[in-house]
Structure formats: structure tokens, C-alpha cells
Image 1 (cartoon, rainbow, N blue to C red):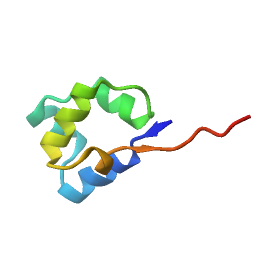
Image 2: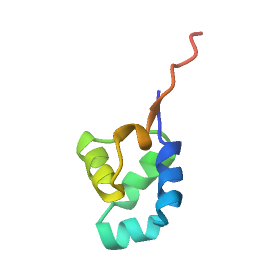
Image 3: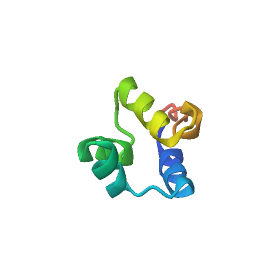
Image 4: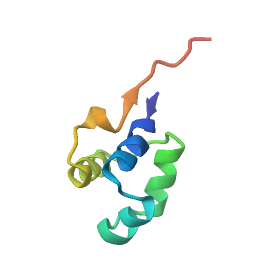
Length: 69
């Protein structure tokens, strides 16, 4: 599973609110919802977020193996 907790930590570190992302950078609220719930997002969105935050992919997302049942 891909998790995006790092994304929200990076926002805080950079001092950028979710409202600022939507207002100043045109990030859609639906994309933020998908990030909050660790849902699938497009690579173009990841690229855009890395550009906005001036960071690497691993700074905003991480792979966590699913627990085998």
C-alpha cells in the first residue's frame, strides 16, 4: 500500500496549508481527499506536488507492504 502521511508532514514543514494548495496552486480538493485516505492518485499529481513542495517522491509517499492474511 502507498501511504501519504509524509505528504502532510511535508506541508507542515514547508508551512503550506491545504487551503493554500487549493487557492494558490490549483490542487483539487478531491485530490487532497484521495491523499488523506491513501487512495490512488495519478503520477502527474505526484509530479505536481513534488514541484510545488520542491521535494522528492519519497518525501511525500512511502510503500508499506500489506499484511498477508
